Length: 104
Image (cartoon, rainbow, N blue to C red):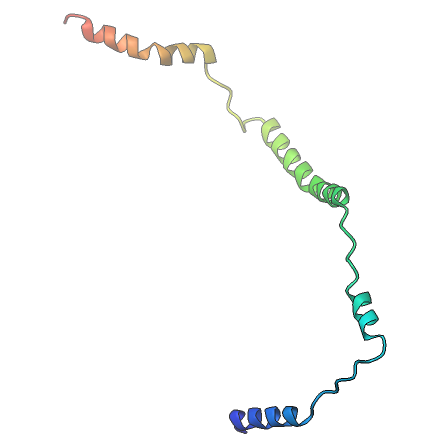
C-alpha cells in the first residue's frame, strides 16, 4: 500500500467529517477538575526518606573500613618515630649544604 495515497485519503476523510461547534455539558468543569493543582511535596519528608535510604550503604562502608583498619597486617606499623622522620626531611637540605662545603 502506498503511504502517500493513504495519507491523502485520511486527510480527505478528516476534512469531510467536520467537528461540531456544540460544547458538551459541563465540559469546562470536567477539564478544570482534571487540572486541579497537584499536592505540594513535603520537602522534609523527602529529605528524611533519602536519609533513611542512605543509612544501609553508609553503615556498610563504615563496617568495611573498620574491618580493613582492624585486621592485623593491613596497615604496617611505622618503622620509626614520625617526629624523627620529619626532622630528617626538613634538615636534609642543610646536611647536603654542609657536606658540599667540607674540603676534601
